[in-house]
Amino acid sequence: MINVGIITVSDRSSAGKREDLSGPEIEKWVSKMGYETKQISIVPDEIENISNTIIEMSENKIDLILTTGGTGCAPRDVTPEATKKVIEKEVPGFGEVMRMESLKITPHAMLSRATSGIRKNSLIINLPGSPKAVKENLEFIEKGIPHAVKLIMNKVIDCALEE
Image (cartoon, rainbow, N blue to C red; front, side):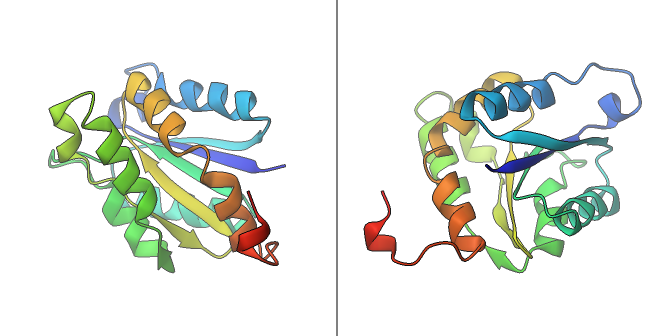
């Protein structure tokens, strides 16, 4: 079973001024996939807060860390920078697929700077901040996640034998 950490990046939600709707959307997806949510955090759009939360989750042996929010072009959107600061390897395919598939729905997808990568044995993927976009993007990438997690955990003997 894959255990999951969810990080909502939002100044307003972290200050209690807006309800977090994207984190719960991720929780629904986690449940649908048969995974287990192990840790949930809501942090402001600050590189140090985001980076430290990713580090903490990876130290707690969270297999999959999903962030939501802060991936656009606004001045406070710093989630990709915070992620890149702490990952050891980039895994660009997840962001590429999310942008490619999302462009079929909205031209705003080209503004996404979402990234993904590996820290220790954790796969980290940045998702957009809207609940609708979270749901859509998770559906675009969900088939690649189990194999990626198994590879990171060194549990794949031969990729040719994996489905």
